[in-house]
Image (cartoon, rainbow, N blue to C red; front, top):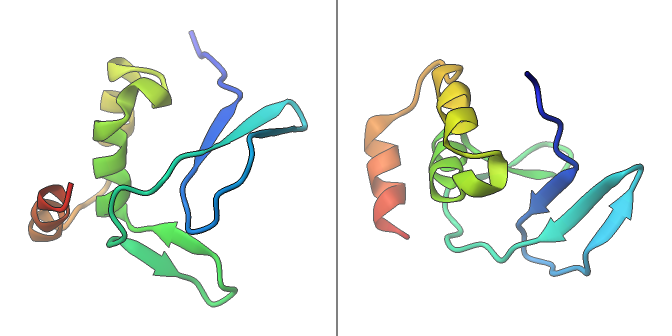
Length: 91
């Protein structure tokens, strides 16, 4: 059974008030660490794979629980273990 979620958590430098768009609620959460973020050519900042994995583990209740986290982790092709360890020490 597939469950749909209608909340998106956004972390960034600029705080914003929660809002809804097209049936999806967007909520701001303050970043706990600033490393592991890449800036793309168009200026958009995204987390790298290691930061994404670590965020998912730390906030798994926000991404549908432990079972969904384990399913997502199973889809990750590769992570840099040293980078993951460095990021985990930054928390």
